[in-house]
Each structure stands twice: as structure tokens, then as C-alpha cells.
Image 1: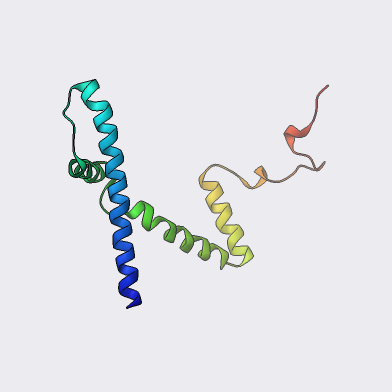
Image 2: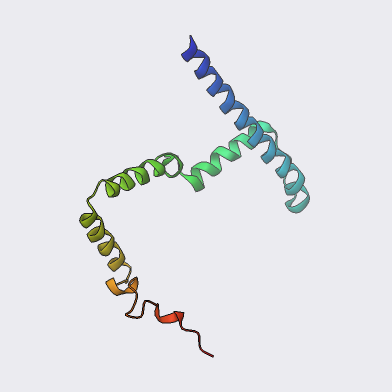
Length: 121
């Protein structure tokens, strides 16, 4: 019973969010488009259709970017954190070398200062 109530809450929440976004699109369209371009006003269902169409054309339908991207990042981070220190250093050197940084880029010179730390008077 609790699971059914939870599912119904999610369904009604999603419907409410879709209705709010559709209302915003409808209001913006009806305020701007008829006066600027001479288009006719739209209703709530047409606004929802515009949202779905724009999602299909510009956002894709997989949901990969907002749903699975975080999971992949967490897996990579866990993999790096499970490495030994030597493995992690070798991994980071390899990644840094890929972007053109060499070993002495992050090292201090003999005096303990970086090259740009000197103040010229």
C-alpha cells in the first residue's frame, strides 16, 4: 500500500511539474509571439506539445546526460580512490601528460619558490 501511495505521489508530482512548465511556455508564447511575429495564441496542450517537441529535437530522448552522467562519474572516482598511491600517481601523470603537463610543472625549483614568485622592484 505504501508503494502504491509513493508511486501515485510521483505520478501526480510529474503531472504538476509538466502543467507548470506548460503554463509558463503558454504564457510566454501568448505574450510574445502574437505581437512580435503575428502567430496565434496557444492553449495548455499545445504548449505541452511544444515542450515535448523541443525535447525531442534539441535534448534527445535518452535522458543520459542528467540521469546517468553522475553515476559514471562516481564509478570513475571510486576506481581512482581504490588504487594504491603509486598506481594513482602513475594514472595522474598519464592524464596530465595527455594535456601537455610534464612532471616538473608542479614541482618547486631549488629555492623553494616557483618561477613566477619573484617580485621585481
